[in-house]
Amino acid sequence: MRIKKLSLWSAVAVLSLVASLACEKRVHAQVTETLVLGSGYNSNFGYLLNGVSYGGGGPIGPSTLNGQSLSYVYCIDIPDEVGVGATYTQNTVTLNGTAVYGHAAQGNTWANGTNLVSVPNAGAVAFLLANYAAGATTTLQQDGLQAAIWTEIYGAGGTPTTGFYIDPTSATGIQMATYLTGVGTAAVSGFVWLSPNGVGNQPIDQALVGNNPNSQSIVPEPSTFAIAGLGALGFMAYGWKRRKRS
Image (cartoon, rainbow, N blue to C red; front, side):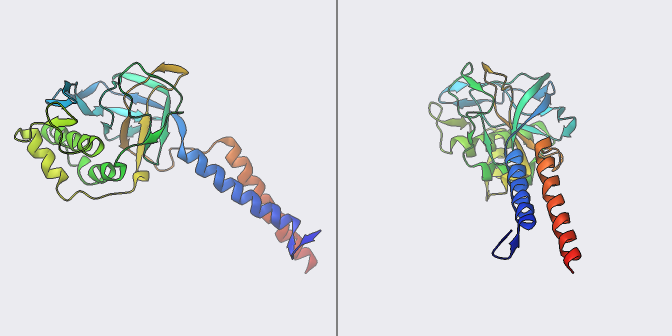
């Protein structure tokens, strides 16, 4: 049987390849991996959100994702808290700038990534990380970078009672301002956007972002390999039939 000069075998091969690529894209968009957060993090450096004082910030370490070392892990969600020195076997990971983010307070519930939303100004957050995270080795630099990330997410121009606020004359505020000068955008796919927990309807934890330790660390599901294999067999069979006809 032929359909407009396209053999059945070639049609199967093409469709299988398309399905394989679509499946791979889906898997890479959202997967569940094991996140191990170290117990180290920076103490409170004097910031407020809507007039409320919260705890410290990133980087949290030493941390790993599926056994791969994370050079840094920064917070992208202030009102919620995440356990440190903890292992999250159901951590939702995306490469598209989405996370379980934006809850009003700790204690809300969610079910394994079903409340993924786009992190505000994720491209600017990616720019800050791409340009400054590796060089932020002192506490002041790390605090300034964390404050810059939160400024991009929660908006600039906060006051002591509204929005994200840090004293602009403080050392951290000055360091933050240097990072925000000329900030642009970068590809969000260069980073892992982390939503710890996700086991049934458990209390949510603070959303995070870290470097992508290995672009191949997010492994396709077995079904992806099966579909890809079907596509390869289809192409091989099609080539064999053409050689036989020749």
